Length: 306
Ligand code: COA
Ligand code: MG
Image (cartoon, rainbow, N blue to C red; front, side):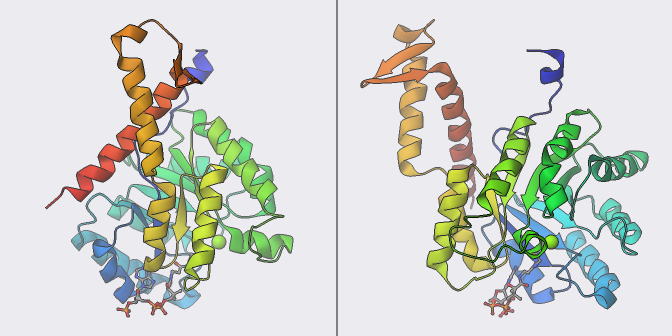
């Protein structure tokens, strides 16, 4: 491995980010619900879902909520307003008070946006565990996705995940919402490739229609097939289908067990390729299988909780 490659801080292999629910920080009723919902992560939103004149109120509610609620296994992410808005300083102050798992930056278009926030967190001695997530939701964000992702290589970067935002991207590009997302797919694939090149997780965009569960299910299946780790969700009804589509299927689990067992068989010691029922299996498949089984163990551990 080259020294550059070995300095990549690849994301935790067994982190679950199938369902990433966003909750407007201003909405008490929704906030009160999240501790009972089976999502992997919660984004507490201070940006677009909170009206301009209610930002301070939202920060106040969120502080009180996060100081009292037990989110258990759910990752806690705070989406703040961009650094060129009058809300940024106060939002960052709240982040430093709440110390969530990550801060989500909206409309990231340049590596420097991520670096500036990382510097701010570093200056305030925020623990390394406080990560940065970046929304890629503008044409420039998509075009610069590789440069933004590659800035995550530096040891002080904190960058951990991309989240795609299609409402903003559709608005900026003029591409209408349509089943299959045909003309958006090339952009989405570019963002996924950039994330993968530099070891970031990548989360698919929200779907606005939370009543048409069939269309939502199709979009989850498409997102999974494209390589996304999970989906950003706006409504509790979207959690179960997201967990199902982005989680390992029974068939995938059975295959992973088969591969893991085959490589741990002493008869195959020292082999890098083996034959399982007429298919070539390589050692890289064993690594993939181990990662998948680690996720299964996480899901099972949660289910077994009293
Ligand atoms: N998180 C937690 N609970 C939620 C929720 C969410 N994102 N969205 C809805 N709920 C709750 C509602 O509070 C409601 O419970 P209640 O009757 O006790 O209040 C229940 O789920 C059913 O909700 P429903 O009546 O179907 O929808 P709604 O009109 O209350 O809310 C939205 C619809 C779209 C306004 C709401 O889902 C929402 O604000 N989503 C997030 C939007 C967001 O964050 N956007 C920015 C990023 S794109
Ligand atoms: Mg947006």
